[in-house]
Image (cartoon, rainbow, N blue to C red; front, side):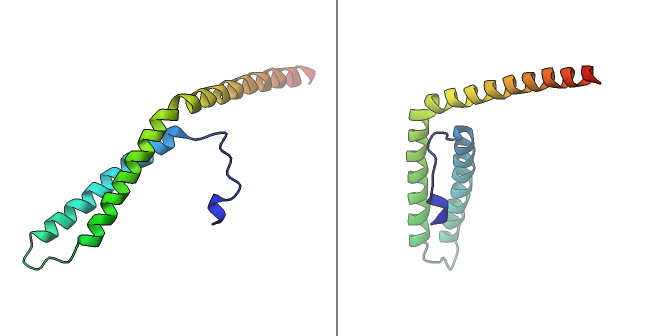
Length: 104
């Protein structure tokens, strides 16, 4: 899979992971509720495999959330350092702009 090639583990966007986990959990819950509703109808489908899939996905997301919490502090420090670097770069660019303007 091309997506999994050349992975750089130096940075991980923790906030994006947290956002996606929240969205997926909400969606998986809605899907599960739909299957439960289907079982209350006169002609329910066999939802065994779909329910098993959803339960597996929920468990996987719980595990990823646990790992995210475990390493959140490590990657949050790197994000702050990057933000500081960008702020410093912007300050330097502003100084350069002022210097360039004064030349003309």
